[in-house]
Length: 419
Image (cartoon, rainbow, N blue to C red; front, side, top):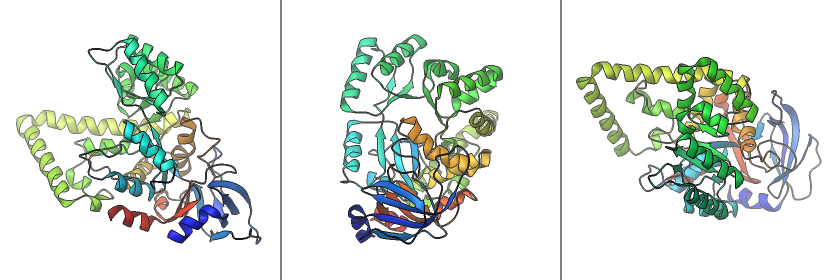
């Protein structure tokens, strides 16, 4: 891998006779038997396959393989002091699963340094977009200090604003107005805990809770809000997999079988089991009826969102992919599980993968730069040994990950992560 990794930067890379899933169209399309030329980290040309090869080109035989854009994890929390995986492990495990872009949703100044180090090639990892440190209401909240913070974050180069919770409607309206004035995208927990208000304000909304809450309260208002969300092109990143790591409707035994758990230290798994066993026992012994209600509520909420998911998609709400963050959420592995949840909920594999690729670039208004396999786009690509449109699990059948024209192998990335 090392030779190819270095030389591919200096020479034209040709993926010969490959089936291209460009993701450029909303409708499913595969271009068979294509040659894809990559130069200086950019897709320079795509043609019907032929035998001509530029001098000194590196050729990868794509016969029987499928080429698609690299995917994006759009709700990442980078490792901190008490995280199970360190930053190196997190980056390499994520990249090894074909994720070539990440949106960090609890940014700090060191994340800007990491983003820039990745961009310069000093650190091997997916392209990184960094949110501001999260905003929430404080006892000293006032408009001037809020604006000053936003202006500073803009100057420092953060890519978006993260809203957490606590502002009332008036405060949030001022906050959103100031962020818009500075040219910031705002994403986070629904403003004032209300999906309809958040959409009115123009916030991109994370998680499933505000959708489930509003649907249960007023289904008519919910669908009116969804129509408005689609019209305003506001995104939802639901992190459904995460709800299967915190809800009582999934047992500890089931969680222990999640992909990637073999990389979690045994001591950590034993600690998780003990904590959950003790907690569940306290609930069951003290308030068994409430414990049962927790299980029913968690199960109902996840099932309801899965019901809403394809219907929101069909109405035009742009969706994003991430498994979220927390115990049992394993870098890369859990991302694929989120893809599987989208398909099981009713989206086609193509629709799901377009959420993972084109939609992510669209969120940042960068579809002219990445997110599709088309000429003049960044060569962040995933070369697969089987068709992911036939079975979403085929995203795991990786031949190579290509990051800005550099050819990487999944097995070697995973070995690097553990060494």
